[in-house]
Each structure stands twice: as C-alpha cells, then as structure tokens.
Image (cartoon, rainbow, N blue to C red; front, top):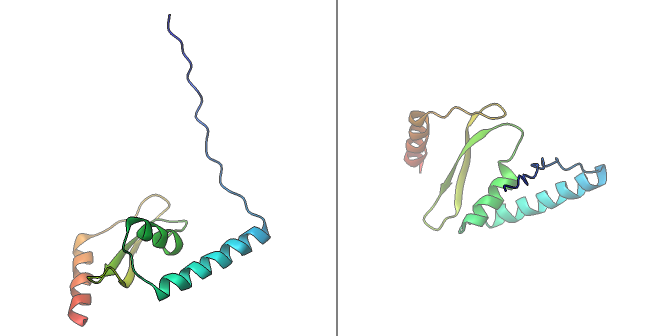
Length: 106
C-alpha cells in the first residue's frame, strides 16, 4: 500500500510594507551603508553577502566586480553590465580590459 502524501508547494509571498515601515527600512539601510563606507572590509562570506544585499540588490540583474586589496578592503565596486529581470550578458574580455585598466591606474 503506497501513500501519496504529497504536500503542495507554498509560494513565497513578497513582503508588503507600509509607508512607515518602508521609511524605517530605508533609514536602516542608510545607517548600514555609512558603516560599510567607513569599514569597507569584506573579511567573511557573510560580510560580502551583507554588502551585496545593501548595495547591489535591485529589480534587474546586474553584474558587479568587487575590487579588493590584500586585506580584503573594498577598493572599488564597479557595475559592468545591467540586464533584464533574469539575464545579464557578461563579456570576459570587457572584464579583463577593465581590470587591466584599473591596475594600470594604481
């Protein structure tokens, strides 16, 4: 006897914030961005995820290159390409050319 106890997948619902909640979230993001600008050390994977969640996240796909020094301090955050909701074209030659240009200017 087989049991078919398949549960239906629950679709995650987007969060809906009131105007006051949106203002609080915006204020918190500004505080965190000031902190990151004063301490731009990305020493752990969680720090990188936090940085990206605050600065890179958006409605469309974007490809960023984070330039770090030897001590994992952020030198530059450069957006190389912007795409659609689920696709962004990235060209390796363009990435290499920009990296070389940045290195030559230092």
